[in-house]
Structure formats: C-alpha cells, structure tokens
Image 1 (spheres, rainbow, N blue to C red):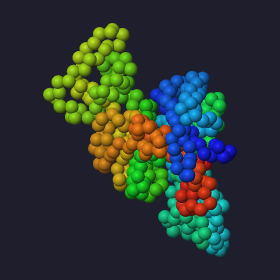
Image 2 (image 1 turned 135 degrees about the horizontal axis):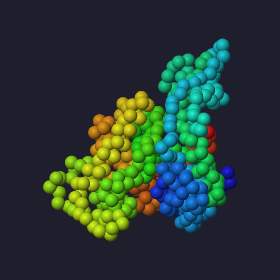
Image 3 (image 1 turned 120 degrees about the horizontal axis):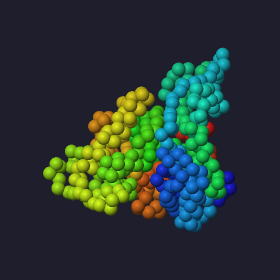
Image 4 (image 1 turned 180 degrees about the vertical axis):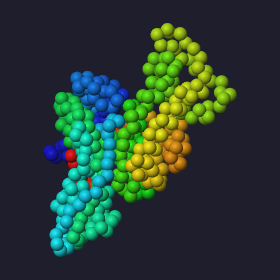
Length: 407
C-alpha cells in the first residue's frame, strides 16, 4: 500500500436509511478526523442492496462528499456488512504436532485455525471473520499465545462470522463501481463494539446491540474475545411502520412522531397525561388528536418482540449468562426512549446507551449512537492495520488481528 494511503483511512457504513462515509489521517499513531458525509440511501432494502444502480449512486455521492469534506482523495475503504442473515458459529479444531513434543510455530497456529474453520456452512454463505477465542495445548485451555510453547497437540476455539455471499459481493460491487477498492469487510456489530465498549466490559462480558433501521446486529464479548454474533430482523424502521399503519399517517410523519413523542414503555407515560398530538391522516389532509400514551401502546409490543428475539438468540448461543457487565445499545434505534429498560427487564441485567469514542478533531455532533458503527469501522481498521504491521506486539492480540479479516 502506498505511503500516502497508509496515512489515511476511509470507511463506509451502508445502511437502509443512510449511507455514511468517514475519513481520517494517522499522525504519530493517533487517528485524526478529516471529514465525513451522510447521504440518503437508495437501492437499499432491509439492510441489503436491492438495486445496484441507485445503490452505486449513493455510494458514489457519499465518497465524493467525504473527499470534499476531508480535502483528500479516497481510493480504498473498509465497508460494514450487516443485515438480518448474518450469523455466527463457534467451532473447535486442531492438529497433531507429531509423535514428540515440539515448539509451536505461527504456521501451526494457522493450520489449527484452518482445521477449525472446516465446518459445514450453508452453500450460499461466505466467511466474514475468523475470530480465535483461545487455544489449547495438550488440552490445557485458556491460552492466548501458544507460539513458542511446547506440546504435542494444538487446538483452537474459533468463532466464525458468516454472511450471504451475495450480500457481501453486492456491497463490494457497488463500491468498485463508485471507483473504490474495498480493503476489508467488517460485521457492523463488531465495529460498533470497537467504538462504544470499555476494556472492563470486554473482559467481564458484554452484549452489544447495534439497532439500525432494518435490523439489529448482535455481538457478545467475553474475556476480550467475540463469543457470539447474530442479526435480528427488527430495526428502527419497524417502529416507524407500526405507527404509520395504526395511526394511518404518512411514513415521514410517523418518523417525526416517533422521534418527538415516542416511548417504548407505556407505563412511563402517566394515564393522566393530557398531551394530545396532531396527526395528519394519510391521503385526506385531515388532522386528528392522538394521546401520547397511544403512541407508546403501539411501540411497546415491537420492543418486546425485538428483545424476546435477543433473549432467544443468546440462549441458543449458550451465552445468556455471559454478559456480566450488561448490555450496550447503540445505533440510531437505541435513541428511542425505553429501549434500555426493556433489555434490563428481559435479560435481568444492566443496560446503557453506547456513545462512540470521539476522534481527535471530530465534531461533537458525531458523538451520537447513530455514528457508532461508522466510527467503529475506522477504529477497527486502524487497529488491525497497526497490529498487522507492528514488529513487536503481544501475540494474543496479533493472532486476532491476523484472522480478523480472513475470508
């Protein structure tokens, strides 16, 4: 990679509602904000590309706008991958080192990971990430750095994140048609985790929910490793659609009502609440009075459905008890009041709204859950790039970096 490109990073978050891009420069190891862009998403449906032409135009406009804002040319970028069909599985595999004990090399580690990834995947799926959790040397568990150790067997617990090949390829195709080479594809929940989690949360165990417009991406981390990933087919747009259908109002008006007056906990709105909301009926031009509590009565069932799905996902993944430090909600949908309370009630754990860590020189209005994935994509890309190029770094972290973008 040319030196000039090494000093700059660009990323793209292609959501169902908006396509966002962010550019930063690397100076003395620090990441400094250069510019960002947000354009309306076209050709997107349910977090996937439904029409290449309009989607490519959205990508192109986002990249052009970020180039103008950052005053630099963008030729490569890392992109986020999401959608309700992203899945994760955990596998164990390993190799025999020989009839006698010998020193473990990095090639042995790669061979063990390759053996662990030999699991049956649906034919339409492609591996997005290979994420080692820990290694076992002669059945001794919990090893992060097996290189240099002596043993006769080497195994690895490996988390595999997979996505439909068409989903990944269509994102790459749109970027290529917009004149951008894709340097990496990153699961959006893992990117969001990069931006909103503390080191203590990573170690103690935490569930990250990235609530987008069309889907909610999930990642559970424990002892610093990803142990579960999933994607749920409910996002912020579903809440908006519920209001539009029940109240018979246009979608833009339903979105406005949700943002200004929405709450997902009915009991948070007193029955004596006298606030009446003006709601225009679709097609008639007539307005009618709607109690604010009625909005909550519409929104609460959808929130319950979402977090019931979450609980089922965590239970099926065997990680329901792994989130020792609670749940972190981020993404635009996390800003709907009452969402954290539902998580606390459903999972019997603490919950908070996650804000992205600010970059140097970054505008304050980007410190918002809507931008967590975008900023996380940049931080993740920078970390992996640094770890891959460093001569001296802890092997446990380096191994995760080596395989983080493997496909």
